[in-house]
Amino acid sequence: MNAIFSLMKSSLHTPLFIEMRGITKIYLNRIPALIDVDFDVKPCEVHCVVGENGAGKSTLMKILAGVLKPTKGEVLVNGKHVAFSSPTDAQRYGIGMVHQLFNLVENLTVVDNVLLLLPLSLREKLWINRRRFAIDFKQFSERIGLPMDPFAKVGSLSAGLKQRLEILRLLYLGFRVLIFDEPTSMLTPIEAEELYRFVRNAKSSGISIIWVTHRLNEVNSICDRVTVLRKGKVVKHLAEEDMQRGIELAELAYYMVGENGLEHLHKVGHRDSKLQSNKPILRIENAVIKDEHNGIKIKNINLELYRGEILGIAGVSGNGQKELVEGLLGYRPLEKGKITFDGVDVTFMGVSERLKMGIAYIPAERLERGVAEDLSIVENMYTYWINAIDSFRKQHLLKKKLLYNTAVNLIKEYDIRTADPNFPVKTLSGGNIQKLILARIFQNPYIKVVIAEEPTAGLDVKTTRFVHRKIIEASRQGVSFIVFSSELDELLNLSDRLAVMYDGRITRIYDCVDTININELSRYMMGLDG
Image 1 (tube, rainbow, N blue to C red):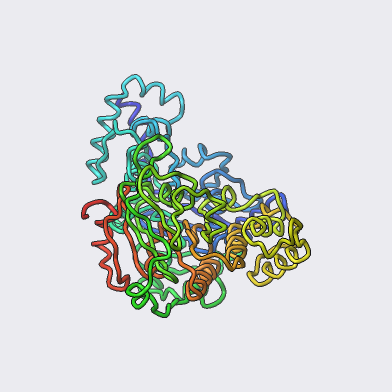
Image 2 (image 1 turned 60 degrees about the horizontal axis):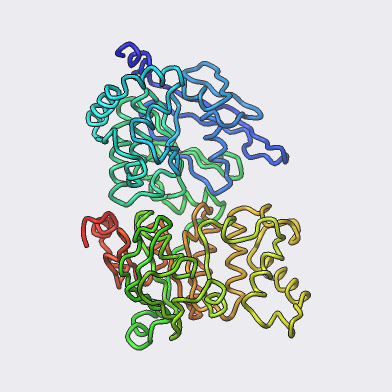
């Protein structure tokens, strides 16, 4: 057993210097994703890769991780040319990725997920002495300050612990280059700080870390060097001396988008007077909702939403947000409680009935739940309207010309990038699909409440700004929003009030977002308070 461990971890104390030279990647559609990109990462450093959605960050990292092959260019490890045909090839050189959506098997234990990363022949040998392997892994995790129970089921772990497992199994198996893909997207502020501390300690032991992020505020706190990608090209390298002086976020955003990338959105206050004088447009009373396994997921929630208000919902993923969204929209029934919309009891109404009354939805899964991907862009707009807006009908006939012209005008107004409005919606980027969803909602004059779920997830800086601006403009016109987001900065920027969810309950409501203490908020999100 000791011989196997020695073999397995033989590279543990061998720092790696990775170079990528002249990397070009052209896909079958002849569109270049990367053009002559140079990139390197040294031992004992954190090298950040930033850029808009579609800038080429993921493609570059997939080439380094062995998922994709470059069209042109070379990869060197400690000065020697290497060719990766698969992730296994990259892993043999100690290069591993900590995935944003966690590459773990939920119904297996922690130790089993570690074993799965090994070659089959070595896995079979270690399986015989699985318990001893688990003890060794547990001692390793405690030694580096990230303790884990090797026999815990992965499905029972929080997002922070799942990420810890992804990191631990790479370190334990001797990986020396760690690629972090949007590593804090599912973490609470406290968990994110713990990750920052770990990264600072890890790099001092010779580990190379590549940190891929769109969160610009992370750059100054964690990165030694920065590479900025735009449209598949490197537009800026920031060296250690640049980072030591400090970099303005507005400057960094300028490199990313080619214009002033940061826009502070100040919303004219309207909540205080309306909260005192107006009745809520939407009220949830003592709501109890079950999940698909018949377990109680929402536990006696009470919430009120006021006209023109943006109510943010903060919480670690998996604490009932999905079930609350589905309950509000009519996809999932209430076991107990009541939902009142604009003075009408809608508890037992279906999705289409609530839409006709004025409740709209911006889904997190845009392709799966937001659009019909095989229908054209125009058809996706007007199939939504004909179910909700009578002005597009004359008796039982559709006003097809009006529908088409309205859709085409909105494509221009919302800058939906397409060569032809009759192309299938699946040809659009994620940002353009989100613009389409917003356009058809805000074209409907009867919409009074919008349930927005992760409204800017995966979007670039420019499109995120656009979405935020449209939400704020609509709220000024009296449309109310409930925004569910794992992006805490987004919630703090948009929300008039902020509610915190933990374990299916509302544990705290902040009436003034500007005065929120982040550490206190994080404790509520983790269930330590409330």
